[in-house]
Image (cartoon, rainbow, N blue to C red; front, top):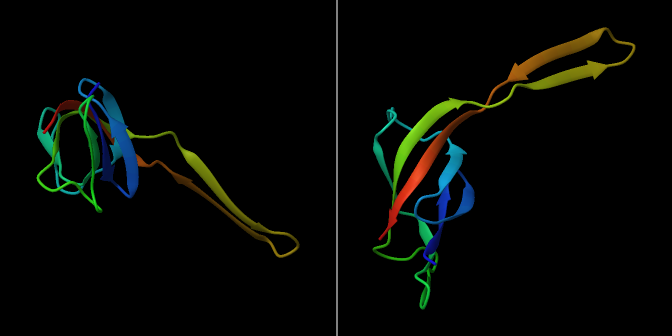
Length: 105
């Protein structure tokens, strides 16, 4: 089974061709259907041989297609100090991108 470990958005993900993956929003303005190339590949396994990078595998890349963009569930943040009339309430929705892995090269 082919798989790779990539790094994006400060996180590491184990990916295989055909899988869908929810990642942090990428910089720029990619549109749904655009091709995305991840070049920070930390490990590649093709079933018989494993390549481990130090820190990345040179010349390796993972190709993906942007399937969806959106925002996650709302997280409510409350700051409160008792006896001082201090109360702040904030909401946050983290943007995300859903990508489909096409190939590991």
